[in-house]
Amino acid sequence: MSRRQCISPAIVIALLASLGLTPSASAANCKAGFVPRAAAGADTVCVTPASKARVAAENARAPLLWLSGPFGLKTCALGFVWREAFIGDLICVTPLIRTAVRLENDTAADRQQ
Image (cartoon, rainbow, N blue to C red; front, side, top):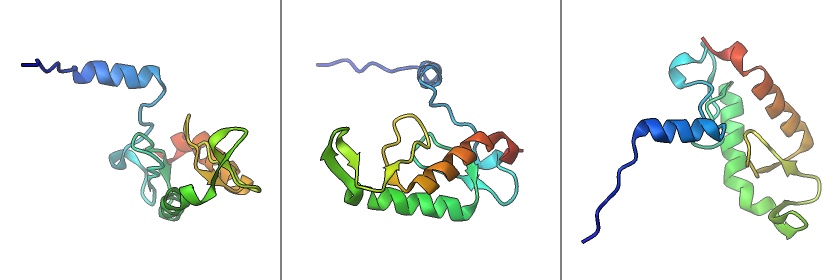
């Protein structure tokens, strides 16, 4: 009979924080007109609803733009770059979109209550 081990939520939160994966905002503290981006589970940068919808579409089409190449199995097709909304974000987007995402990250504090 195996014994299940439980990990304290405080330990999980501390581990996520040490990896830089803590949410920067939540739905409850985005200013009016902004919503959590949700590029991945822990991504709660406040963005416009249009940006959130764009991110969902980018996530859905991701496999179509990945190739096996010099950067591994998720090398982007020609003309695309990794989005980099967070560390490890390997969704392929145009360079213009990546610049917009960086701006969202840089101004995230301005969109929190």
